Image 1 (cartoon, one colour):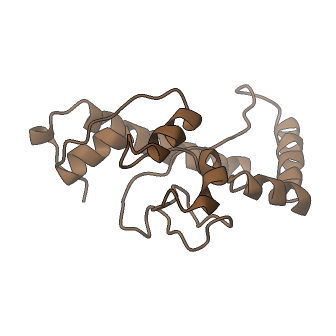
Image 2 (cartoon, one colour):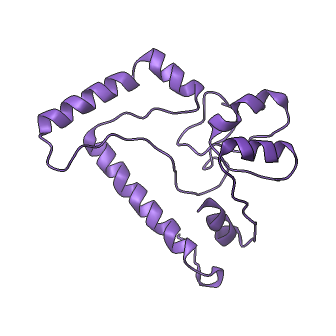
Image 3 (cartoon, one colour):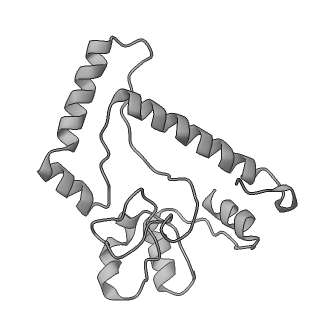
Length: 163
């Protein structure tokens, strides 16, 4: 979706090469087979100190503590919807006290300094919140996904960027 978005938005024709995960992508990047790659930051952590790759931006709401000098996509002027998240869900109609208890324990864990430190070392930015905040996030995420799907299914000449 990111590649389709780039090609549509920037009116370019970058060719995508499918790989089976971050390891093969990192190898291809190091071998000079790729000029640019998009993959989770955690896949490249071992290469960052080698000087053989150059991170351009992180796809997150805020800068990574692992690479504080590297801008977010938004800071780099790339208006791509955020992606990649984890969440906790319960069946529809779950009793409110159970939902609140699960959320309370989840938020408590994601605010423990030791766990937050572990997550940040894995390039994961915790963002605990309320069930209502998560529901609003899911609504925005669905709208972003619908936008990207529309782009992916339209010929370039029919595409008009959102203002």
